[in-house]
Image (cartoon, rainbow, N blue to C red; front, side):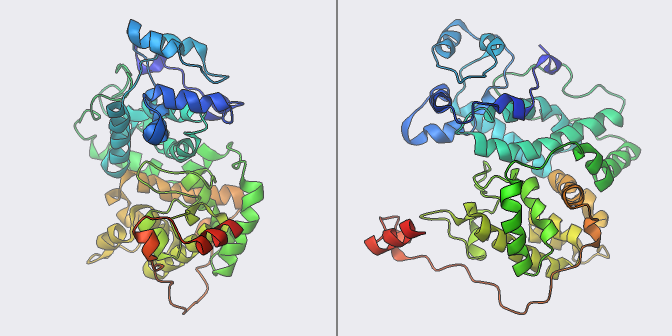
Length: 394
């Protein structure tokens, strides 16, 4: 079966009415092949394992049919389910993250069927919904890659046209000869265009949490002297879900990695302040202010937020380049699309030109150092009673 035969269900429809179904958790843990301490971790990758198209072996089919499925699960897929294992999960996430960092547009187009179905099915399960909200935003990059590869093709068929989809990719995307320079230029212009991203996202409504979260996020940004319109980075990062997480360990509305969170005063243990909307918004605004001081423009600031200060700084160092456009082709493929996507989302949600937003207000206060780690936290032992009481009070 080719990938064109796969059902590509909209994530919102696939998840309707099931996300809070108590049976979903049992299904996620059971199908992942384990319970207890590692069950939830395995369930985080369940959606990818459900992007299946090969006929199931009798034993595997019997195991699947014995599982209590959540309401709304597409029954026509039962005949094609194969029980996954940890290697399948790890394989898919490894390839997804590698391709976003160092892959080509052809690679992302080849991966689209896997990612699309993974996002749709993970959204139906309570345990995997936070990971689905992370993946759903990255799905945009795979779709955009597929669109430009189809629109500006080299003289060869689309790389994923006849490839069967099994439990997870059994190999990395096939390495193809680079497209001609003229085609690469056309593709680059397309994926770097904020106007094109604005057209792509024009019909997408704001996240459900936006009405509740936007006012408090904007207050935090204003207090730090950062344009409040930029809170919509949270939509691009996490679909505005405070509980969103990535396979690499980023978490929260603004998807801070643990080290970056601690750098801006957020604790990650024993409770994770990255999931606190107000605190994470304050940290994000401080980080954006720091990046703007360093790089001088919002597009370069967004590129550094996504790819890292070091990656952008090294490309600018020793060259005459001073704009995102001048270095875009040398940035990770995700970052090349992340920057115009942020510009487009801010424009759509606020009806402003994000490129015309002012820089942060001057602030000479020193940046908050990483918080000191108490001995009980460093040793991973239970906190003293008075700490527990304070935490409960919060």
